[in-house]
Image 1 (cartoon, helix red, strand yellow):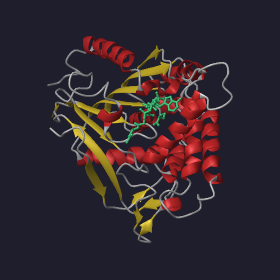
Image 2 (spheres, protein in one colour):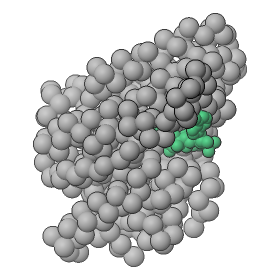
Image 3 (tube, rainbow, N blue to C red):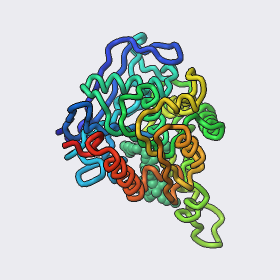
Length: 358
Ligand SMILES: CC(=O)SCCNC(=O)CCNC(=O)[C@H](O)C(C)(C)COP(=O)(O)OP(=O)(O)OC[C@H]1O[C@@H](n2cnc3c(N)ncnc32)[C@H](O)[C@@H]1OP(=O)(O)O
Ligand SMILES: N[C@@H](CCO)C(=O)O
């Protein structure tokens, strides 16, 4: 069994065509596994977790309430895989990786990537790991988009699909938020420079904008209330925005931030598949769709749409003070929902799909 924090690397050494028509000369994915792979009679104990925008392969770091000994996804029972997405900066190929054609980092020249490209790269990793069947594929936000695309592309691969705070297509509202953030990056005078920290101050502003979409009026009202009635400046809400901007600058880069925002914009399961309902109709996985009532970015109506059009889907909602970011925070209600749903499937299909095949 691998230690949770051990990062492995998958190097794909062949030319990798992207949806845009561009080609990557191979790629690297950073990934983690926890537990021991068990596969028998078409069943497996694989739990594949897809991360969101600025996440990484180290799922225990950012989803420790869901993954780990004694948690719902437990390495004692499951083989848990999480890969850093193509284009990101936590070990996978992205804009700061070397472009073999120039010997320099790609920077602005890293090609446009889509959720389908990410899923194609994940699937190559799956094959490398010898995984024939995924028992459960789960993700929130961009993670849910990957899980959904995978289930549409390969309807027999994923037995159970869990989509949290995610959607079938990027909404105009989501694209508008992302474009405002890209404008902030592009307004940074360093953005055109070819260095790793180009556009960092723009990204700081972009993250502050994004936080407004990840949280909501009540989150700020509760966590960043005025200290007193006399204050004229240095409001808590303002220092919070700046602090969140500093945090992203410390751990990320503007090239990746911009690239992955474009990945989210182009998410549309209906592309080249007739229509969005037709695409969703291809999913064969038993599916749980979870909405967060206070989510402004991916409101519950988007998840209800998914549940209406995916053939074997159930829909559940949770409350959260934290809006969209609730999927990274509300471990207890999420675990309760998933546990109940899983139990209902185990009862309905004993011996067919078991949560704990060990
Ligand atoms: C290397 C890595 O960090 S990898 C991390 C991987 N990242 C991911 O997976 C992305 C997903 N994660 C996230 O988006 C976030 O971490 C979340 C949503 C899970 C949690 O967000 P957080 O920023 O930790 O929580 P929250 O909004 O409550 O902010 C708390 C922070 O703001 C600080 N803060 C709160 N109020 C204020 C204020 N008024 N002024 C200044 N700072 C403030 C807190 O001190 C705390 O600081 P800390 O992060 O240094 O401990
Ligand atoms: N807060 C999340 C974005 C929401 O999907 C992240 O930074 O990954």
